[in-house]
Image (cartoon, rainbow, N blue to C red; front, side):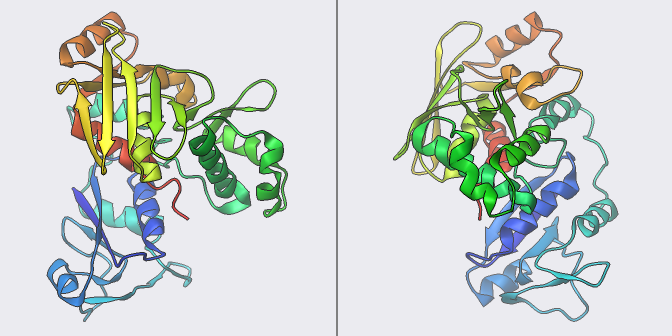
Length: 324
């Protein structure tokens, strides 16, 4: 299934619509595309009846009777009568079910879906909720990493947490419990996906920013999508030790070697992504070495994905994290 979110440029409800679509999917496989509609003619062509409009395989399941194409703001009435700028998660889930989207991944994709469960928090996404200061503190931590390459101390985050009437320690503890970040034994930030405070296999140089470490290959690919900046990712093939680089220039990634792939795996047993999958999502110079690594690690079920698919996963996971 292809899910298209049609919006006018800078629509304040576009991020909310994408976030709720992701939550409604809950790990189910579907291509989600955000399309900006620039004028009335394009709205008529694409079937947008207000911004945002959500299409499931080209069909608007929420279109009221007599709706006409429009680039105006669109509001949705929820089950309790409240009005929102996007369909509710429950309404989206019902629409997906009605459109016939399977509850689980289709055969042949199950390994990849399982492996990505921890990456995307079981379909709940990596963008923290706005309530209780969670998103504001998460975004402050992400911006600090992007600017400095290091984790902020909790006292740096106190003014941000205070706007929600909480302490930084309280907010960080909740973010850690929900696996938006990890803390060390002293309560300091060890990682906030996609960044790591400690060296890893994956080094990312951000244009106009810092050099940072990422938690895994997917996280590294998510950094340019999240920041909207060019990056140079430097990693190594775990089997051969040969370098793998992904250089984003003008938003277009170029991989070297040209046949490089990503293995997406997850250790069984559950737990935070840092523990169960971050060391099992790596770049490889080609499918041969990726499958060799998988054969050597039968305890890590997973899937080899190509470059386009790896970029899609990364964008879907991290692209909205810094949206206001």
